[in-house]
Image (cartoon, rainbow, N blue to C red; front, side, top):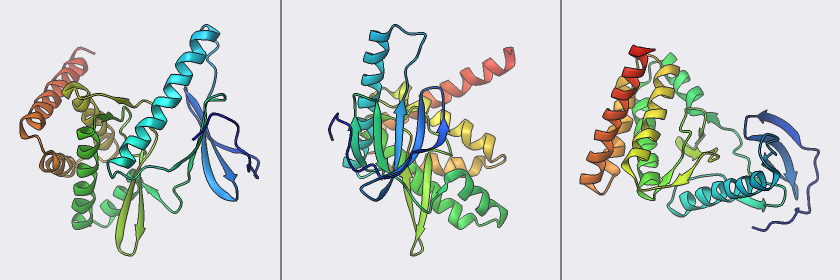
Length: 232
C-alpha cells in the first residue's frame, strides 16, 4: 500500500453509493474490477481538523480490514491506499448476494438446514473478529456478502468505515445488538435464527468467562433499548 495516486486506472469511475461519510465507486485498476471508497471533505469542520480526522479514519478502516484478513476472516483485498485523497482501492466481491438477500431467498423456500448453516458461519466469523479486538461498528445484513461456489458458501465482511480496535465487552455487545436489530427488522419472526448465530459465536469464543460477560452486556444493552422504546 502507498499514499500516492495509482497508475493503471483504465475506466471512468461509476458511483454506486453515497453516504454521509463517503462515496463508493466502481472502477478498474490494471484491468481488474475494483471498488473505490472515497471519504470527502466536511465543510462544517475546520479544514485542518477535517484532514486529520479523515486521514485517521481512512487508515483505521484499512487496518481493520487487514487485521481481519490476518485472523482468517475474508474481507476485500486492499489493492491501494491513497491517503492524500482519502481513497481505498479494494477488491470487488463479484457474483455475491448480501446476507439480507440470501436469507430472504432461503426463508421463501423454508430451507432451515441452509439457514442454520449460514447462522453457524456468521456467528463464527463475528466471534473471531471480536477475539482479534476488531469492532465493526456497522454490522448489518447488507455488510456481509455471500458467494456460493461448489456447494460451499463464502462469506465476506465489508464496509469497515465505522470500525475500531477494542477489547471492551461493551463494544462487542453493541456490535451484536446492532446486528440483531438489523436482522430482526429485516427478517421478522426469525429470533430462532439469530439465536443460532449467538450460539455459534459463543461456541467459537475461546475465553468462556469473557463471552459470558459479552452476553451479559448484550442483555443489558437490550434492556436499555427496550426502555428507550417505552419512554419514546
